[in-house]
Image (cartoon, rainbow, N blue to C red; front, side, top):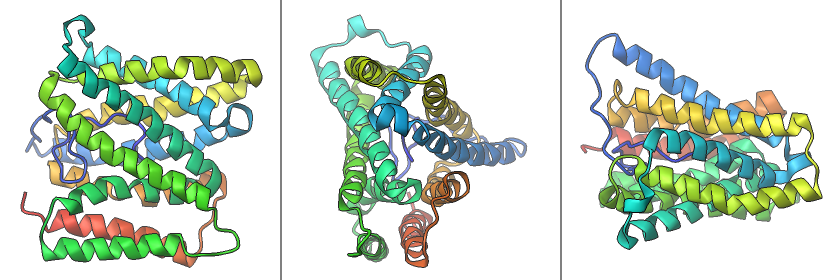
Length: 303
């Protein structure tokens, strides 16, 4: 689940704002990078699961607001944006990125509340997958698109218990993630370093400030709910962001992107173990189809 601004990874599915540091070829760095990837993925999905525990008190809106605040603190500390030096040509994509970032997280967490962690993250992952497949004319990618589409049809097949609003929110998160990738490219070309992502996170936090105040006034939070929301922000924003920066110094971009495709599986496992959100055979098959489509596309890519 991509609920934090992406560190710079020049991959087919998750191209981001700035250039990633070259992966090290040192023998000791590669195992450490792989271990960090596993920890980052589990941290991300565990954070989302813990954040969902605060839904009964804060709702998805309140949890996302806290997450935006945490993300802003982390990214501003890392990126140190010089806002006064920004021109309008730099500001407008940053503002759009902030809007997309907030909408992406809000729609995803709302989808998690309705359809569960595993299915919501799988639907969201269609965003970067679509970007990757749409930019290719290879026959194998056409096949990957068909596989992914079959998975989506399986997930959204009509059933008495089907929550189409929840599915729609997951697809909205996917569209936002795709827009986020494209906007990040623009921001990366116009704003140096991580300043653009940091500025966008700060603006998004300011946008959610009145929302957070309204949530607190209408639904006074408990200490447990606030702790869950903050923990979600740390585990799904701070830890993965910093971990990915380390990973990209030791793991090739293609391997990084290939591992990212496993996140829907991690989300489903965390949802099953931590939240009791069991999935049936068709749902697991659909998740497997989406993951396989992305993995096959990346593994057969020459770039």
